[in-house]
Image 1 (cartoon, rainbow, N blue to C red):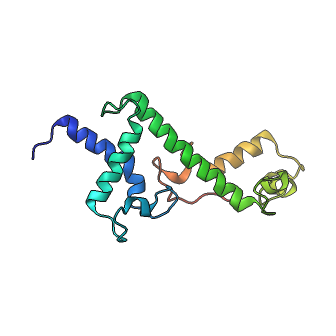
Image 2 (tube, rainbow, N blue to C red; image 1 turned 90 degrees about the horizontal axis):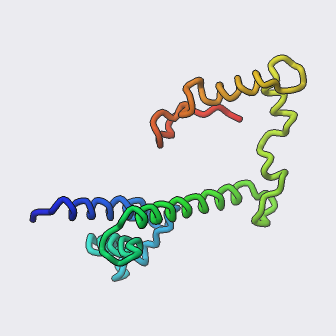
Length: 165
C-alpha cells in the first residue's frame, strides 16, 4: 500500500498526539482504558487504538475539515499542557497538604527547612545572613556549575543527581 506524504504526516501526527496516553492504564495521562476497550474484553486491539486516535484527532479538528491547522494544533498542545499542569498542581497539594483540607497554608508551602536552617546552610561567613555572593554560590552549586540545564543534560533527561535544598 502506497502512502502519500500527506497521509503519512497525518498518521504520524495522530500517533504523536495520542501516543502519550495510548499505553497507560488510568495513569497520570488521564487515559481511561475502559473507554478505549470498546468490546470490554480487557484487551486493546489495533482497531480500538486506531479508533481512539481518530476520535482524538477529530476532537482537535475544530473546523471539521479533516486536517489540523496551526491554530488547532496549538490549541491541542496547549490543552494537553494545561492538563499536565493541573495534575502537577494537584500532586503538589496532595503531597504538601499536611492538614488534608485541599489547600496549602504558608507553613505547608514553607518546605522542609525553616528560614533559620536555610541561612545556617548557606551562610559560609557565619554572619547570620545570606549575602548575594552566598546566594549565587548556592545557585551555582545546585546547577552543578553546568548552566541552566544543571545535571539533567539534554532536555527531558532526568537521570542526574540534584543537590539537596
